[in-house]
Image 1 (tube, helix red, strand yellow):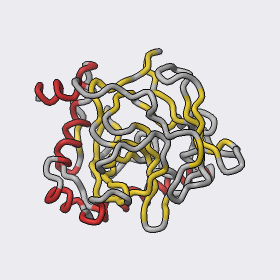
Image 2 (tube, helix red, strand yellow):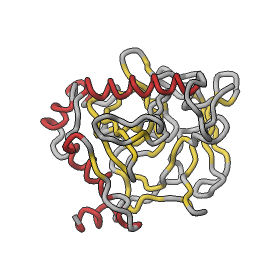
Image 3 (spheres, one colour):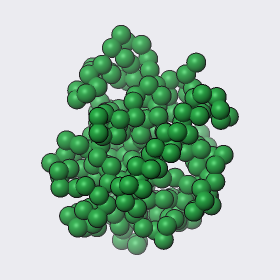
Length: 266
């Protein structure tokens, strides 16, 4: 495992032009554009989302859950990069920003080997304890690990094919990791469920699980754990997770659940 950690630390630095280029996104979201505000690598950096009229929107609340048969994924961290970027759930309109802890910008100690993002209109409710894992949600949208071949620009709204899910437990909180592939990836036609990932992409599931198990240990944190005997659960289970967290999000925005510090639309 020391070799694994050493390999992750030796990865590529975050490229300067990692965000989606200003202007309209292609695919089915031609009406959504992004705007960079502030300097990359500073606490002022924000990637804002706008509609066709130039009005700022929330990637969490305004982007739909699905595009036809596919679920939408908003890319926060492109493949092979290190800065820990995320949709800022507590800021107005929820732009993408670099995570800050104890006044310092957070970076992974090595690059993440997949595109990483979130599914809009989902929420892992911290008030609900999961019956199997005995852990409550982490108060964030559901995370996605996209396993395709391309590095996808930050801020891209990417339709993905859901394949499975890992039940990660981080500091006592349940933090689902949906495993998916972008619908446009050449490999997508061959992958239909988590068993196909095992068969046609050997080592990928193990790699995801071990990366997320170990990534905090250089900071003196304990290993992360996984529920369900550490198994990657199938597509059906993953979709149930997404739909349940979508229902939790609906309750949140309807005021049926305490919002805490989360920013919600009026």
